[in-house]
Image 1 (cartoon, rainbow, N blue to C red):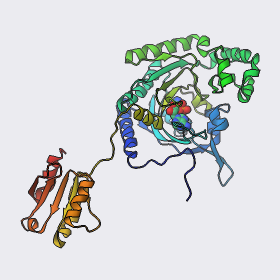
Image 2 (image 1 turned 45 degrees about the vertical axis):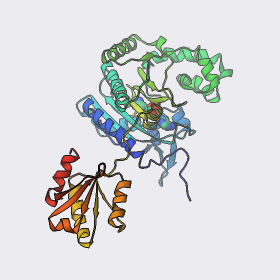
Image 3 (image 1 turned 60 degrees about the horizontal axis):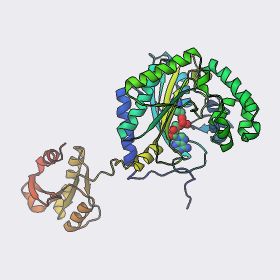
Image 4 (image 1 turned 90 degrees about the horizontal axis):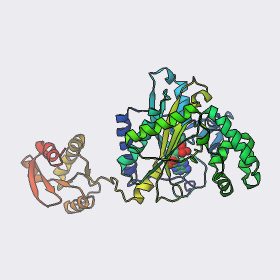
Length: 420
Ligand code: HAM
């Protein structure tokens, strides 16, 4: 037997209901916030991620599923959603739509990382992106939507951390200071960071290696290098968040694993799910549209890891809807009654009532046992004598009570009792 590759999962009935529930919350919440869905391809040209996410990031250096197609072009399974959405925004002329354009997506992402609890090679994100406004209220609204999502699904005790990593102009002084600091400490750095000192010292701030983390404790932090504009933007975001009633912690050491961020960056952490405690994150990316070949357009967004959200819900003992039992089971006794079953099933199903039957020719007793096993609420029993009277019997499985109902009135009789 050929088994599935490491780090991917089959999502089976019993679990799919939980996924559908998350998706239902996502659709409802994005609707009330005025975000519209975008669906972009699972694979893109590799160059998009090299340019968008950044050549020096772990994602691009080590984690991409890249392959050549039959014409020798390099394609990559999307490791994240933002770059593809930005490409689609430019390619389809969404910059000509009334701004801001507010988009969301749900779907699989792919990263070749070492699998462990909460970290997979195929995982799913719910993401949202807002284009065309550089205002701090947009940063705050995006964060509000993110926190509302967690609250709606029932997560508690989350920690929202925010930071500002500065714009291109504050970067220059920060990069110079970082280079200066790390040049004197090269012996403590990992081999990747050693190269990053000259190429892109900002990325060292995101390194997970023990030695580098130790050196980072004393390293210059982005917050100390913010220009006046970035300082007031960051202050306004905090003020707006407070006005929305969202609590947060400013973490000057927070940097994100992707190169496109300018200004606001944030992450949501949840205790109790192990090492992979970041269940969502995002930030502002005011240069990304230009980097990808579009007109200057500011942007801000986030992505939630849905597997980690489900892990956190399980860890907190939050019950999500499970498999739905059939509302009605149709049983019959006798040849003539069997002939009526297909029509009755079709009426009930057409009326939106979840209805099951037996497929294997069991006797009435066996069918009732089946109905019990499937936890049906009502059993419709089609019998010859009742048919002669134009009726069917209906039994409430909870009480065992049984009544005769005219066949023509069956749908409305059941709907009333099912509260539909
Ligand atoms: P990210 O922080 O790389 O950001 O990913 C967002 C979330 O995806 C993480 O917080 C985590 O919950 C989940 N995640 C990431 N990698 C894995 C994995 N290997 N297994 C399971 N879950 C994972 C982004 O992807 C940005 N595109 C977010 C963004 C949107 N920024 C602006 N707009």
